[in-house]
Amino acid sequence: MYSRLLVLILCLLAPSLSSAHNHIWINVDTKNLTLSVMKGLAIEAVFENIAIGRFGASKARMMGDNRTPLGSFRIDRIKEPSRYYRFFGLDFPNREAADLALSENRITKKTWQSIIHAIEAGRTPPQNTPLGGYLGIHGLGQGDHAVHGQLNWTNGCIALTNAQIDQLSKWLKPGVMVEIW
Image (tube, rainbow, N blue to C red; front, side):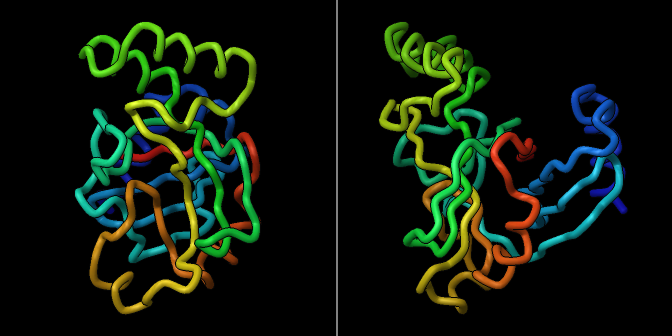
């Protein structure tokens, strides 16, 4: 019930979500380790026992810190097949992450500009900045199911089993919003 109330509050605070009552978006709860497929305010599907970065989640994610970024992202690329079975890339670093990193002196103005220029041009942001990249939602590939069921193990991605990613993939298209909190 608590997570549903939080989803409702999130939708009320995010006009782009609440006004898009028929649009699919993804809600990732890093505390309860669930991924919900939302259609406006309605829950279409819930995937439990997801894995996130091995050191949790953070607004101030940096390359190599093995944390999942918190915030609003979009699916911007799909790689099938991939090392992790299927990979749905996030547009990280996005403007919010770049602005925060610049204000905290974690990136230079030049790096910030390279991220912003890519975003404004409709391209995937550079993936090799100090903020990191190559983050997305993916399966296990040949990974160990036992480890996945017991530990957060990724370098910052959101991982599901291959069977779960098969079910989820019908909703994951470029442009789909992903809220990670």
